[in-house]
Image 1 (cartoon, helix red, strand yellow):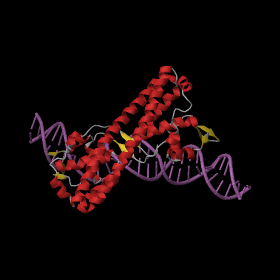
Image 2 (cartoon, rainbow over the protein chains, first blue to last red; image 1 turned 60 degrees about the vertical axis):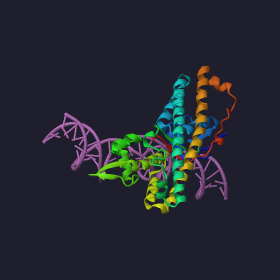
Image 3 (cartoon, rainbow over the protein chains, first blue to last red; image 1 turned 90 degrees about the vertical axis):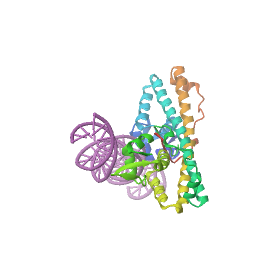
Image 4 (spheres, rainbow over the protein chains, first blue to last red; image 1 turned 180 degrees about the horizontal axis):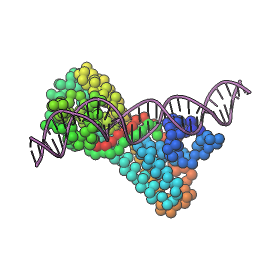
Length: 152
Length: 152
DNA sequence: ATAAATGTTAAAGGATACTTTAAGTCAACC
DNA sequence: GGTTGACTTAAAGTATCCTTTAACATTTAT
């Protein structure tokens, strides 16, 4: 099967203009054209899947392009491509870890606000809490990345 | 205890200029000043923790400012503040879910590249694989957010 | 007490990732 | 065969989030 840019965009949850932008950035190698119009086929989808995944986990366009260029060079670059993917996997794992930490913090805040509501005012809650409810800034973990979602 | 902007920036893993920027955006309410110089104390840290958390999970500055403005109004806004936090928790949960999905995809790609390396070339691998190794674009989940890490 | 380090603001600059606009082409329908 | 709708490009515009610069004040160290 083959698809228009609009159909593909819908499937990926992005705008057609986004796909054109990706193409312009060199992130969509070897898209067939008929009369200048892009035609996506099943083989393109394999790459769109992984592209989407890299995009949504915030691999910069620049790095994705690196990957694309390597892939174009063929089997000699399998190792380098693997490195890029493994690195990205590490970032994802790290992001997930961080997210769990952030989630806990937010859940504490949520609990805190609910308690304040139950007691009627925040001051009452503060008075009822031990001096430090287990949260100190210097226990804060380490991160480095960004994460991006949207449709995927 | 009290701290300079530089010390706080280091603790949070951001630059002093970032904190000044946050301040300018109205994200740092009620910071004490001595001769114009910002002095952060333990009470500020409570907010910096949650601010950091909201920032790193990509709550837009605009929305964080909303929260700040609500907090300034006192106990009458506890409910609205709770809504904002609960909404953010939902986004974090969603992001985590998405990340697990992305992780699987990337791990498949990693396996794929390793296999291709083992076999010597990609074509050999493709020939050895069933037609569709369980990955179809139309199974792709749903997202809407961004995630941000860094130090937290 | 003077030099170096650190602080301040306002404004401009940079990075990244799209999105929109304008002008135009092409296939399809009435 | 003309209008509609989807496609095209190039270029400018938008959004978001800082970062850098310049010019100046204050604090700290020698």
